[in-house]
Length: 161
Image 1 (cartoon, rainbow, N blue to C red):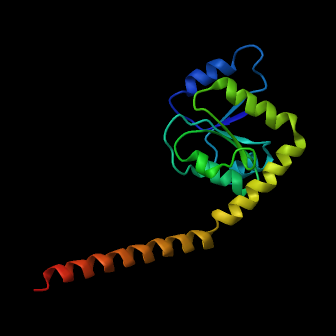
Image 2: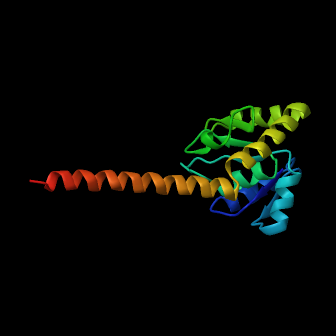
Image 3: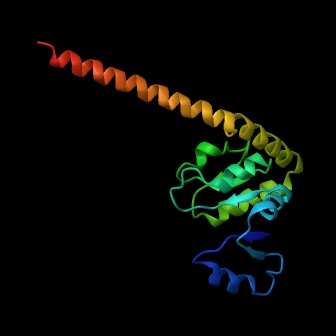
């Protein structure tokens, strides 16, 4: 298990990892660029165990784009990004046993995990490409322009004698 990143719990994690029997856990700190991409691409899965109401964590999208299934907490916008059993697995935020069960499921089913990896990559290509982002942005602008026109027409009608 490789734990990437830093934060206020880092000292607690370092103590926990130094305990006997934890030699399979490695704290790699903050990683970027090619090192990060390699870690994600080579991983069986990535885990986003957020207990905060995140909407669109880049690490989750990067994992999907590299064909790596994601285990994420069922919190904030994460369930909208992960299709449980298809592109990854979801568990209740803060539920360590449910997270452990997700990890067992991923590690015990090579075929199922491979299928999730294929689906993760397909989902990323479908929803998160620059072209798709541009299409969604332009659609938002068109909707806003349409709404603005309706508001202006309503105001003009109200002003008419």
